[in-house]
Length: 391
Image 1 (cartoon, helix red, strand yellow):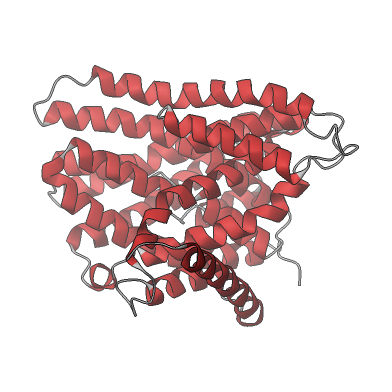
Image 2 (cartoon, helix red, strand yellow):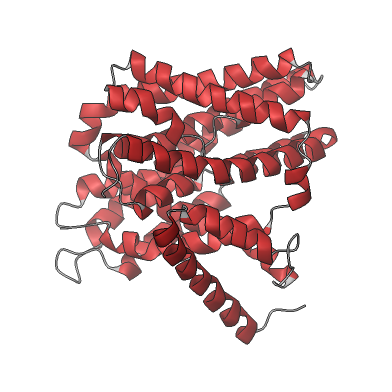
């Protein structure tokens, strides 16, 4: 079926209204909107009632890039100069410990269950990845305010950067174990993806900090914001760089240098919702109910190992960093969501190891659905227990 102007507008309109309905239902039922959108996506997708044309599947990559670029830019605001000087060392320790600890636990547990070492290395490299869009959406939806919410937002942005670096190392190790010793290029690509993204975001952030907000006194307009965010995200994707990290780097530069703005990220906060709605609906649209109901041993072991790894490693990192008891006891439970970044890493691994591709992809798709349902619930309950959700 070919797309037409009318069907495109019709589907976009329906998606946004479904998102509004999910928001209203979530408000009265206290079910996280992320879960409702994923379940609705599954229901209308090809593995459910199959109500949506097949060509909609082609929207997912660009919807993911647009949503995560906007989220990355907004997260960049959290790294204001004074704030990062106060919590920078603590956040660095927590993120490093969380990423390395989670990967180590998943790797050891998979080896304990006698999975091939290549599979253990790859799955361990994917395990630390989180879902910045999911975490930010839950925190924004419940209007959580406080130390735990702020630390969670900063941590999900940073640990994905460390996670991509670690994944590159694990992928290179898997290549060596499998007999492919030509892995120096993989390590170089991993370093290039991270540091290149930071540099690109900073370069685009410099003119953005000066140009934006000049037409309308002291305000960052919607046109300016989206123009720069999509430019940065698009260039990063075209250059095979991390567009999430690039947009976050750009947001960090703007938040530090654009002193003439009263609320420099206000417009992005208002406009991000449509992108997140479409992203989560399409994520559910790609979910295979059959794979969820027939999770194999690898999926079950991975879910348990990742859950234990994320919670224990993050607790350890917070303890070593001298974080408050509120952060130390709760932060790990807010780090369970896993979606777009993990799926992207799984696709990269499947391309590098075609013989393991089906096993890795099916496992990550199924477990991401689980973590996107259980993770937001865990985040919401944890924020309420910590007293950071208004009554």
